Length: 119
Image: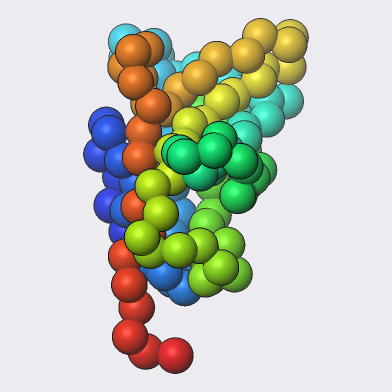
């Protein structure tokens, strides 16, 4: 349940749950994301190999609410010393695809795994 998301990185303790929440708005109006799909890719920065793919869940399409759940089994196999990169895309029901995270077009976000002690 503990993790951090900033404009530049997602940080999660290895073996923990973390939920990334999304709220889609255009100015003060909610964007209807009914029928949309979300995908998060995590890749090894050194060789661009995909190490994790997560599907998002639309919780309340009319009010633009969705989430991506990262589970303990998703991070337990990842190395805390590796550099990972990530982004999240939404594909609307009409087929339009947009990268929604990170928002800065000139960079990718880091996906950081921190060490756990308890087993």
